[in-house]
Length: 52
Image (cartoon, rainbow, N blue to C red; front, side, top):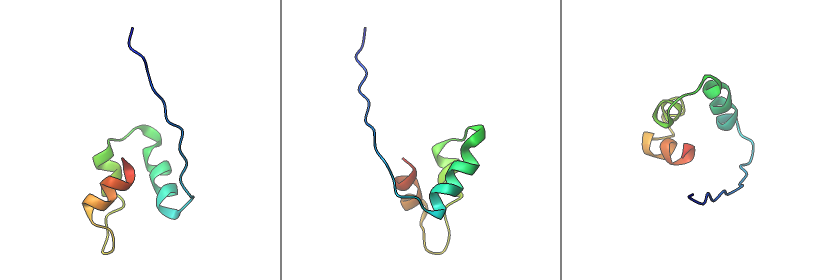
């Protein structure tokens, strides 16, 4: 059987994090979650990095 490794991490609370939590309750892909963060100040690649 394969061994699983887990990492526990934390993130400071932010409006962006709350937005992600609310949006992803029904299950969303990383791409769909990242797209809700994109705006004039946040590029799509930055949003994807933040989510993943």
